[in-house]
Length: 243
Image: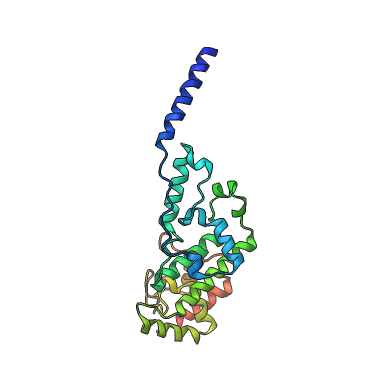
């Protein structure tokens, strides 16, 4: 029995050694346009982004020892590559307001919901365990940047950007709420972008409230927990003013 165990152990060591030849490439490509340099957040916000996001969502990944040992290396490299495909903070857009605002709002939703950073990452990285207050600070900052981005003239369409900027600068509280939460999908003037045109909706007020609160599967994110009942009512009233 002992002899068999020795052979099993020896075989396992050989297999483990052979697996090391299958390690995938751990790459950190050149940084094209860094999110933090482009957006210039306050020092505390920047530190939280680096601790919670940059290892997977940038080209500045710190490849720790376990990322060099198969089969763990397969999982780590896969997770980093997948994370970069969804959001790469080293290739932050330099123009195109819709793309920027979509990314900012998507980041805010992931942070505010607690979906990011993922549990397996937080287990190993203590600095990535954001408190509720830190999550709120990050999400609020991202939402603010998205709103301000809508107000900036677009390099590719300065006339449209100036129009949106004028509208936002003179916005009522209800329009500001719309710009902050809806414009990245439905357009600054609600004419539709990724989401549909919101003019003359063929829905009841309650149906609109439900869609904002609960979302629509595979079509629209839920704002439950992000917007209060009063905020949702304000948005419904604003949408009813659209011709």
